[in-house]
Image (cartoon, rainbow, N blue to C red):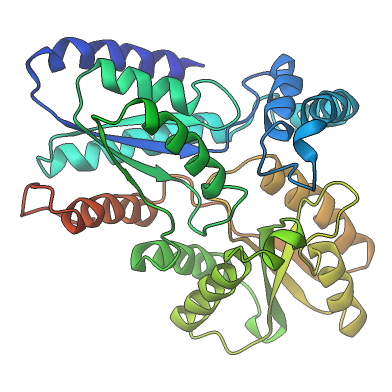
Length: 355
């Protein structure tokens, strides 16, 4: 909460500073969101399942709100227990604020007149409310960067719906939405470094890598969602950068509900590896997550580890999420600068890179 208070104070400062239009470009980082405390678990779940891109089966609009209410009530206590085990708050919240702080520092270092804001899809501050604040602060252009490297209807697509709806009512502001950035060289480098660090004291001859991505309903893929393809391309770029010659896998986690989800499931891949050879190290890389949250800390770090230990796997460990890795921050910076240059927005020509 301390970071959130500091962030709000900075917004007040920007309002005072921007009375004279010293800066006209705002950058809005968007993330999934999460509960700020245990009492916020149920509202967060309701907002999630009330999203038309999440419950989007035929005629879902007729039942979405009551279904969201039902699911959020049914899952409230189970989800609360998971959050209790990771500190009673979604770590995604403070980490996103830190990412914004690091990105702002890089803009300042390079004398780029841009201010970074934060919006969440399913918790406060909501995307549309932050966009309203940005307009009140007299920014003329807004670069919107969802912290989802791979595009999916259920993530960036959901953000796109909100932004487009808001944009129709605020057509005097120039909006630039970055839809995917999974192939950014610095993004790939950030994973490469973290994996190399994790493998430093490991017997590489008996190690297999599992890239674990958040699953999505299969019918989205059938409708043309590029998420699976982009996940595969991301993993291939990392493997190439690593010069990895041993076994590696792509798996999916966090499925929910009766519909068919993108597979193979991560727990099933672990079990298949165990059947083939128990004397194996398994390194899990949370590939679609740029922040630690309940799916990485609890699902991978506890549930999947228990499965591996139960089957007698030699060693099970995971790469941390990217969080504030300097190469990730540089990747965000790259995307914003490139977006503005593509759209012929005049910015400082000389900018530094990470050191």
